[in-house]
Image 1 (cartoon, rainbow over the protein chains, first blue to last red):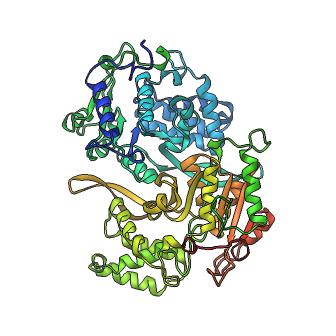
Image 2: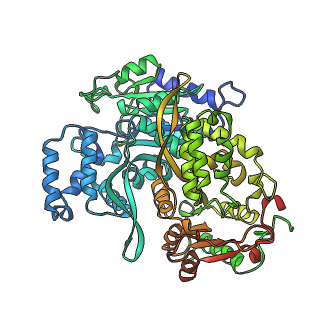
Image 3: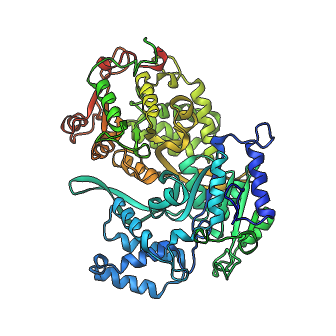
Length: 304
Length: 304
């Protein structure tokens, strides 16, 4: 691996790398017709499958599975039975995620406790195939891209279908993205007392679903700004990329999972989806498709 | 008025000013037992009545009243009739605000259009008593406080019962607080097409009410951090101040409107509220009460 002084060293020379460098030059060169002031240099990134591995199951789902088999939750037999039933009938990642989330939250956790549980889990949980920490399965080329954009005055945001509180405990350390720049799905919360002090408790009621058009609404609600660069890998990211593209100059990238040897090979759309495909959108709207097999020298941070 | 090099020049010497300076010294002095790293130096400010004038009516309410008499909305006679009825029966500021908001939004505005309307209004609307711009009726001592905290590594956030999009168009210019640091009430939004491009439209359905415990939940949802300094002036801010106080070292301030000559004189609680009073909380929890008449040399930015 070459010196990190080189621009985007884990990217092979090619259209994708070139497009990134050209775009950044265009929007950061004063006097350029596409110049964008720093305050408007917003870049939004999907998390699962865009910044780190999402197969064989979403990390957040692995976390809930682990938590659910812990003693505290097992004590609640009814919840456990319902859980087993769900697991048996599990079909769709995202629906699973929400069902498990809701069951997990029946235990009446505060947001602080939830984040503490995530912190603890992420420090030791291993990926079933690669046998290393999930945070080591972040994509090295994307970490380089985050740094590259930061260095050019961009503000990076994560816009995840998972919950913000699953990402916040480790996002600063791994992505250099602070807790206030994580936009995600959420459940309702309420103010309660815990040990005589006010605390925020999670409720088993969905509040906001940060997926497909929800990603656009989540960004708009948090920032009131439209990204000029957006990165995704699946159907859930289509609207975010479409929205970013309505800016005069923008960089929209679709990370395409094409490498079954070094990672996984799969399509951006779930098998049960029959609408206009994500790759069709990419083609029509001229998004830059990143072919992981061809465009990336290294895949994982752990390859470093 | 003395040189702005002086710390908080518009504050009279006294307990309130002393408390601010002591607190900032405690949390920013490395090695102090109360030292707080910059990332955790979160300060949250209510807007109406804390950073600018809120009488005789909330600025956002004045904005809606103006907008509703504009031709576009008058065309919708049904909405207009309903509005007149509401105006006639108007009793409570906050309920009014939401009713008017909902009616206004029936016109199908996009968030961009809404913010453009606010921008236009705020540049020329005059306060009925002081006959100057609303932005000139921001409190000079509080603007100094925002600067003082920023200079000491704090991140300032606005946490308003009004909508975030009413404040965002001018918050950077007036408060030096960027759009992503405005937490407020909101209505539902949806992704729609406007002139062939994706746009976010406002829906006449309340989504989040950033008032009382909602202020805590709003901060927690956006930041996942607890403020160490919180500033309010009314019942709507009680929970936010209570929550900030559960930190080891914190600065909780209640701006008390005591100056009928230079501004207005009124209690923190609405007349129809019979619960534990805000001033009682302030006393029990040792919040610093700022007596506007005694503690502030100047009230408004326009006095400068």
